[in-house]
Length: 366
Image 1 (cartoon, rainbow, N blue to C red):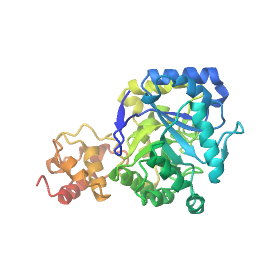
Image 2 (cartoon, rainbow, N blue to C red):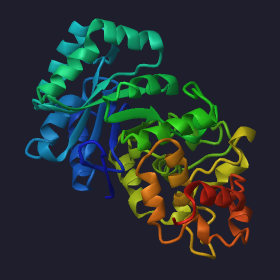
Image 3 (cartoon, one colour):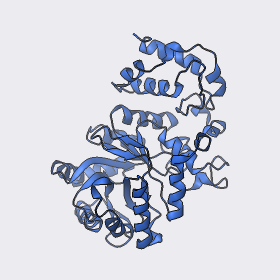
Image 4 (tube, one colour):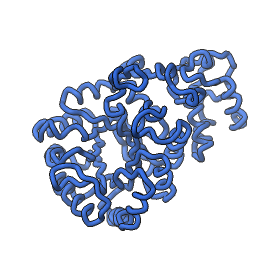
């Protein structure tokens, strides 16, 4: 397993986590086996936004004895007391639901307490007016909640909550379909969504990724908006390459699904390569570096994707990006303008010109 460090706190989070939206029908016995198998393979981050109540007691049994080694992402606004998923903004209902979840999970603390599924400004206003946001902050002060977060599909809402300066983690829907304006949750332009990812990394806010496969639509050429199926590994790598992303949370239905997802960790680069996207991205996405490094190897030894990433992050306000850039073994100043990257870039980025811009921005190595 690979791990990425949460900037605000330092927890090491597995790049593959586990979602629960599809797990309920497996039944408690298999869910318990799945969770144990995930933990044995290094998975330590679990999102508890489930479609029903079935996974909770199974999780409680599975993590008994190793609770300190796993991180639960629990949603304030998801209610499971009826046995099925329900969404609520009522603070009293939220409190009772969270108490139920903690009891079922056999724990007395929450690693990541999330305001659940806020996609409209009116809902965020209601959360604040009802006292839910204040309640969450109080729980953090008391040590019951270790980190505050938000789940949303809307860049505008994400930025509003980021403006509070209080969250450490955000759950956001990232996949090629949504980023390129296809699907119900394809909210925001290409530039707006990429700017959000960069802002999260610049401000040290981690991203946990939901809907990496667009609800499975991207995996089937008949339902893919691109009329071309992508693989799970391509979608996972696509999300992991975005700034700020710490973990991807695919939903699994059974043990076979989990084994297949874990195969990503041993997949060869060709299996993870999503450069095919460059042939069917929209016009306004052309020319935007997505840090895929399909242009590698650079004849001059530059890590073109990383150079672009530090440049974009510096412009987004990341105060450490300049230092990271300067300490690279090769910087834009070492570009020999051979055009190799321009000819290989599937997203039609003019990297030679961009290296000149980056060199001017950072002032060479000085």
